[in-house]
Amino acid sequence: MVKSDQVVQVRARFAPSPTGEMHLGNAWTALLAWLDVRQRQGRLVLRIEDLDPDRSRPHWTAQLIEDLHWLGLDWDEGPDIGGPCAPYMQDQRRSLYTTALEQLAAVGLVYHCYCTRAEVRAAATAPHGGTDREQCANRCWLLNEHQHLQLKLAGRKPCVRIHLPDVPVPIQFVDRCAGVVTEDMGQTTGDFVLRRADGVHAYQLAVVVDDGLMGITDVLRGNDLLPSTARQIWLHHLLGFTPPRFAHVPLLIDTDGHRLSKRHAVLSIAALRTQGQQAGEIIGLLAALAGMLPVPRAIHPTQLLGRLDPGCLCQPSVVVDVATIRAGP
Ligand code: GLU
Image 1 (tube, rainbow, N blue to C red):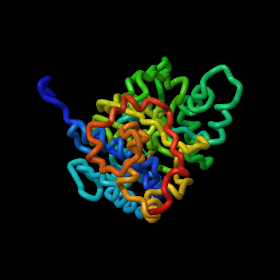
Image 2 (cartoon, protein in one colour):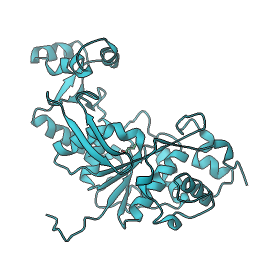
Image 3 (cartoon, rainbow, N blue to C red):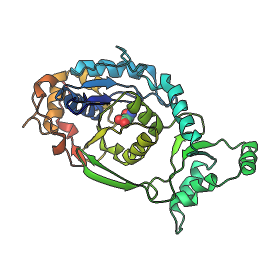
Image 4 (cartoon, helix red, strand yellow):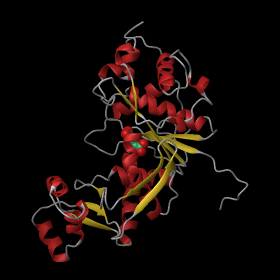
């Protein structure tokens, strides 16, 4: 029990997926998450989200850690240094996700769904009066034992979905960047997947179990994940955790409006480094994009402490003029 005169220490995390080279957009989120927690004397956790075996590779994890260090960022707990909430690689935390799923199953909240992706898509686009959930996912929620058996014998591999209540479930939260957000999941996501048909736990489940068990109080991440937040808050409550505070920062986009991604190979941190860019120059560029510097100049992350105000980052995206990034010394 926390007494009123005790201040709960900020615990934040940076949770990259090792699915390719770290690019400028990842560095932007990492810098902002680092500043946000360091400004408030909190602890930063590095968690590697290598849940998807098809896309994650160990060498990308090693490269990520090297790039983050090179940029001048550090953390207090992580796969390379350990910590009280180890392991910090999702691949090694699967039993925790299984336990959480069992907890939800024990109270009758999950079910096997046999619908293929194509069926879900078709239901979502079909002209109908109800929600997608009523059209598709709910079909499996209503199956009886005999029907389950028949589908299994026919070789259909089910995913596991969580069943939302039959009444509207408006989730409201105050995002430190986006302000007040309200979402009725019955209308948006419907019953969502917690474990894929191939047995891999879904991001939505894993992230909540990890943030909950790691005592994360603050999440700062890209606003592409804003639509996931209501589901995560819902799961936090069901699993008995306190949801963290969220700050969804703008995404970096190029001048054509495309989100910076692994497609922008020239903007990978490794490539910029090879081209002779200094870490301080990259930090300075990102700081200027976030309004922490009037114009880009080489700077160390520690010199930016106190300058980040997530409340000022409320626009959906920030444009990076790729052509202006120096291609060599
Ligand atoms: N692993 C996710 C990514 O790299 C981030 C998840 C999160 O911050 O909740 O996009």
